[in-house]
Image (cartoon, rainbow, N blue to C red; front, side, top):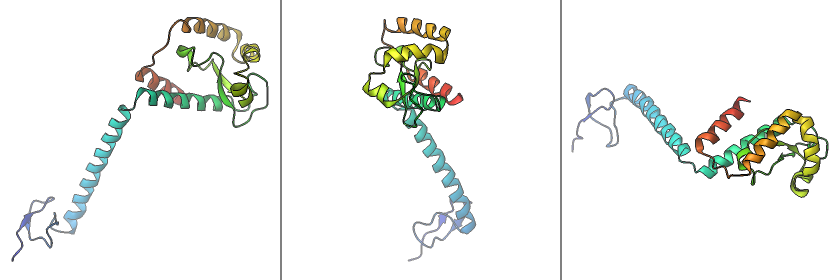
Length: 177
């Protein structure tokens, strides 16, 4: 039985295929067709990747933001001693909050509220708040400290519900820093 002729997907010419899966008439058309197909597949994958990023849950975006902010704090405070006890810098320092991130949700990502803190103070001494409060004005300045206290006083009155837009804006600001 003689094979049926097909139209080439690239040049639109009629040809007799060697097998039923052949889509193009020759090597030149195969190379061109493959380039177009790869480009189309890449565009499709990029589109799916973008859609997947947009579908991330708010909790996931919140987690990414927290991670990025804490990484920035560790870089910013590299070489500085623990904000609470003055222990020399170590690579495993935490990003410790002066005002608790759980209670003061509106200033959770405030860079004046977060500083490099040793694991002992942050995790085992509940932030060592007394020493943190004594050393914080020296680190950020008295005016910035007073402004932080004011922001905290207003923050405690309500629970901040973060939006994706706000979180992405914070991530963008951190990248720029």
